[in-house]
Length: 88
Image (cartoon, rainbow, N blue to C red):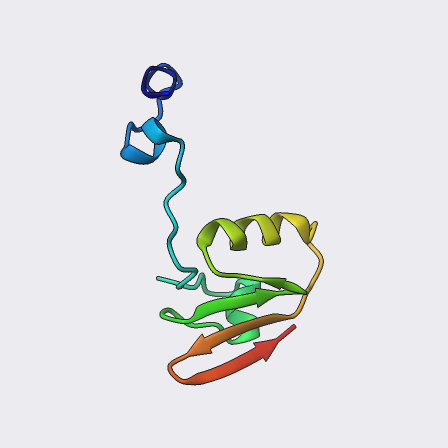
């Protein structure tokens, strides 16, 4: 796996060597001004917990759920501190 990652120009990490994807929580570090996320009210530091009917735990969940929306507006739920917020 390490050689395949190197040949593909990918960074070689323990995840690529052992075939394990890193799991990072879906916490936003930034929100693009004028984006649908900003229009929905999301802010840096928010943790996305659901997109449509899909529960979100990790970044990989979020990116897959966004890709599945095919550009359509869907409800989103997120945590900000102790509060759960939602928008479409």
